[in-house]
Length: 355
Image (cartoon, rainbow, N blue to C red; front, side):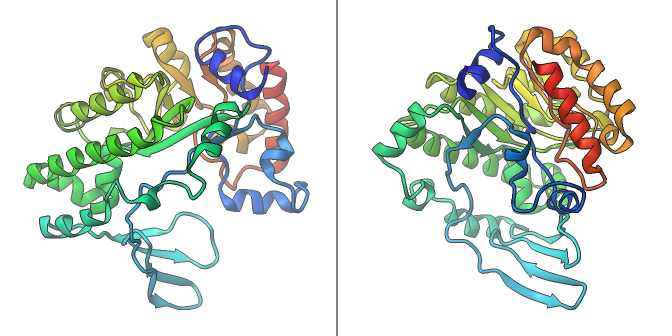
């Protein structure tokens, strides 16, 4: 079977030659830098080195157009404070490639929202790839690689505009504005999806939401149901109407209190299933059965600890591989405290299991 045939069959619980093989969320830059000094050959792509199955995305631009001008506000030998191309003020350490610190966001008021939404015209031709046309459509239809389309979710979009703390306060102080932002985004996505799905049929659509932390969702199920659920149904209903029945959500943390709402909203796959937040893929399968597809859940801390901990983690999810609909992967991007030799051991054991 080729990559695409295998993936589609596995995610529909059909027979395959072997399970799909991915590191779904990849690696921190610092991780790969470390591994270069521990055995990963220079110049070799880490995905090629481990021979993962291949996939690629439909490159649609969902960001502000025009972009903000990147401007440095303050800089010294240790760090830089700057405005990025999305209008967010960040502080980055010059000695690290880890996530920057988020200091300020472009939307603080309704006036800011009215101004910035002018940058989100879904009909702007620059949103589609420069290669958009018949040749690209034929390629996506015939490639043996898994084809994905990624979009930003409703909480994710609003948070990117306002910042997390401000958004959480806005749910109570300016609920109409929150509703307007999320409704706007649903209409924006529908316009983009119509343009894409009229010409390309991806194997799955992934929605980046990232709305949970270690102790649970960042908003209550009631707020999800009121503000997000109708928009989820609207967007996933359109996607399913175009024949795409695999719709994923990417959210870290403990999503269990809102898992049922994701399912009601038309989502049927969740990742990365963060083990440190108490999420257990085996228990999710027991609770939801085949209606919930799963990716991830291998505790990144086990890869740091070494072979015995890795073996325990893989043994824990072994039963899921007997049924299908689950892809083994680390429960986040692989962090830089994972030694290369531990990761090589992990990959060798995974290959034994999926074969």
